[in-house]
Length: 582
Image (cartoon, rainbow, N blue to C red):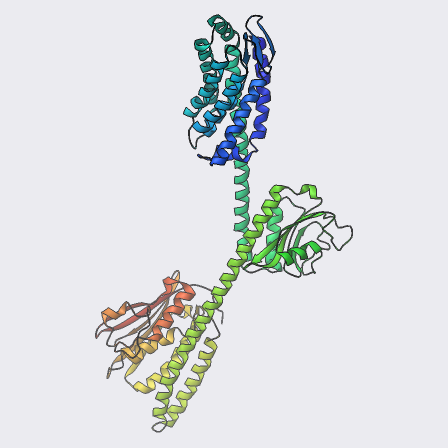
């Protein structure tokens, strides 16, 4: 029995060695990771494990129940012979990993083959082999790994089933009993151990692959996170050097480089003495990638660096594409082509797509920013004529009655226009500049109202050096003067308040005029309204609100409070952004 046990373990060892090969097969990996196999893959699995079971039969030893000694397995057995084998391992693994159809199919192939070999246990062993595949499938758990003690128990149980069927179905019973007494325990233990070790190897290799894939994914995400901030600024020498430095730290390569269509943007690693930024591209292979838009692996015979004795003997050169147009390359250099692996090729392919997508994002961001700035300039340009026409009307009315006053107002208007023109080209101005702009406007309006309009300034001088979008305050003040108090005969007041808070600057324009209808307050500044309507709140406030939101976000939107016959207060809050020192 001990001798047979040692022989069985030796044979099982051979079977186990096959497990390393099995784990490299695609259908096997799909069977391990997925709950269902395609029909084609299922047939492949059945054939494979069926043949695996047949191999287990031939790797066994024939036992002669009369002579009580072991022989090699022949093409046909005598009536006194049976086989001590590891056939059950392949069939059990098929059922555990592939389910009923794979287990049954593999069992049928291995079982029918065993039946053709003859011997007094042919029918019993063939039947037991088929049942073993079904038995193993009963223990299969979809989406879960089989634990090793369970695998040992299932393999041992399948062999015990075979021993039982031999005792029940093989004749004469005396031979069957002798056979089971000699080979039963060694086969139960050896095949249980073999099943567990086979599964251990499969799970170890699969787990290592999953771990490697997870590490690769983590590395890719880390690279994406680190490089995105640089490539958002576009592809230039500064951003390219930062990206290449990140890749050089993350990837095992002798050097990393980026180019545009004509020049090297950055090169980090060895050979940086002649692969330098802003130099023309040095290798023919890079020019070919730019021309074809396809990844190329350059070896020592094809890299063709234009500098003699260059230590870089191989490279993976991948295109960087933007809107399907090749705009440059990403290159991983190695000393020899032996250092290039399938993993590094896949990595460069992924990096090429990743960096290309980041360049697409950067281009989209720049386009959005340009559109945003263009819209802001357009909105600012809309405001300027609106005030100009109103101001000219006031001045025209004073030319005959009070020429000196008209002359003074023209000086104020010229100052206002200069500030207005400057505002259309600036994103931000200081609050002091904006306030001077408003005061120039109010001098004109005070002339129209004579002594009826009183302007109150409540200004915290600490806010004057902070930023504000140009032409923000004047339309709000104009709305208060031209529409809020326009029907008042006396005691009209407009208060301009600017106060510094912890995180914001609060600016408020208040009038004591007629107020705004409640049903229209929620619409003001959020949609285009007819400025000729009785409410008098048209494009001016809409444009101001749009620019505030586009510049600072929703938190800077206009807040309007108004009551009929009691006045209106329009407030907005600016976050403390870049400070302007005057």
